[in-house]
Image (cartoon, rainbow, N blue to C red):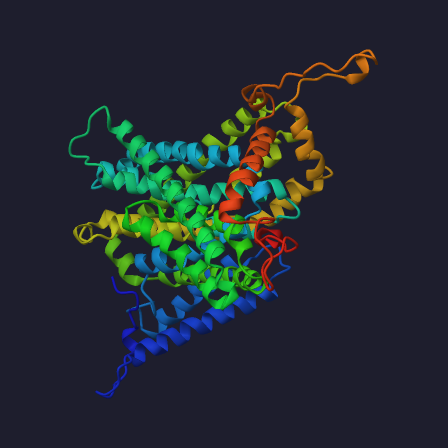
Length: 547
């Protein structure tokens, strides 16, 4: 599919010596003008609790598509055609990489267990329920030509949350726990949904037997862990190269360029190996922020932090503007040839499955976590569970891109049901983004902030390394001993016992010891880079400090 498809009504007579298409230039000029308008309008609505830049870009795209549709007299609403290659290869990587690069690692890994439970097990639960619901309900509505693979693909497609829009309606300062969990879950959820989608695509459904679920699980685990390992290896390799060669002695441009290219290379290698590029580049970003970022010069630190954030910001606005304009593509709506009632019924069924699928794992997993946690201050309140359920209902560009991938194949174009799936998915995305995205901020204020408890500082929530070290020694009070007797040797607690009683603290302590002793001397990081004029020092903030 071509990335750029100029509007027919903008076609212009060109000189034979011209090597650029005038219509393409006009289309790009209009599109970038709309990008500027989205940024300006988003700035003006910064304090508005009912709007954010994702909704703004989506609505501007819808309005622009409607204007183009009127100008072309109903023949086209596009200046750019939605392209999966454009989305997955150019727009999504910088967003996911910046998410990993800017993540506050302390908060992220503090809630890592919950994030993995929601992002992996929750997505799988949602996938199973949505797929089962689609099989049972779609045929009753009149959608009869879909295969088993299509139904499972619908489950994977609708399980992908919109982490970009979700993060714009949550505040890291006002709701740090929710921000951390929903942010982490959103990224892992997107990766898990794509991995599930790829797993469904790779299985031969002509010979279905009892082992099909085991094959799905095996394929999923293989893609998940190999993609994660590839991202970690790519990040460590970049850290080792920059630390060893120290490009900053001659040119800061080279080290910045190497960070960008190696991050993008990790994504492309994952796609080349049929792995999950989104998971690979996310963990590559985390590793780069922990090691590589500390090995570059001070000026390169500032440059990379702002460059990655700016590229990600532009890509986010581009995506929502893109989706808004593509939603009014008249060709897709004509191809579905479904009545308004059928279209509404299918879209409503999809959205109802999304609601049920998310509720089916948010509340049970949150309460399961509460049963494990001993302290009341660390348990997830019902109000927080409700916001976690609500904030994850929005669907975005990943959902549309996967829908295109599944239902716009050449052999499926002739079927009305395939076109109906695409248009119904677009309706779900538009409705969830605009309605739920606009209500989330006021809902958080009404449900959480008015009943907020005083925040507990991290200093009291997570003990110091010295406190953790003391945990590894059995309780023994020297004052209980006779003054003339030497203190006996105190046996150490077993790591397994500590892991069971203080899992988060113990893992944090053991990782810090391993990192300081083995990883940082080899791959760099704060405190292990030798001082060279212009080299990084330990005084700079990490890239996540301002996110």
